[in-house]
Image (cartoon, rainbow, N blue to C red; front, side, top):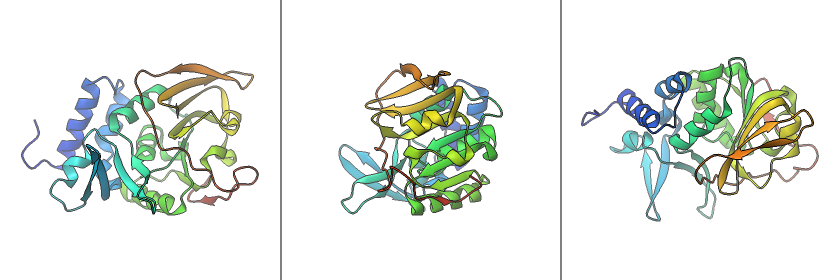
Length: 250
């Protein structure tokens, strides 16, 4: 039971229990990650869409902390037209995708779409930061994520560049997680994955889990339910050499 003025620890514990009860978290390792990583530390300012209207919350607002631990997507960046360009994914969806990765100790995982850095922190807690690289096209967003990750005690590799190109410098990988929408799986993702590796990504209105074969083909199925992410934003030079800035040992 949450008290009238809950602490971050209480809210995080309650959120984790809800995710486990709903079947989104199925393993002790991911339960420990969600119970340990402070989501609020990655979202000092965000908006939530309620019945078509945006409600903004900032650190210090009475409802900020409670809302940070609700099972909703938190919109964290907008372009000049007020279109959301980055968010912290709904925790229940995040948990389902992480469980679908079926990671093992020692696996290396690139995350396409750094966002706030919260998901990279969960991966780092589970696998160790030296096994995680997170990529985003927005250098300012990557710098902010790197700072918040360090403050939370996690230092995975961060790359400012085209996520559709992956991170070949650190390949091959065992798993690949994409928290952005794509129309099809980019060839570099398959090329950078070991045979038997798993890709979990958003295609269309669903989340697909694919296993890579020895011939570099990938097959699998969609997870139950509908889900969409913001579409991956390629750099102007997607074809050919990609502009990249490194915030870690990629």
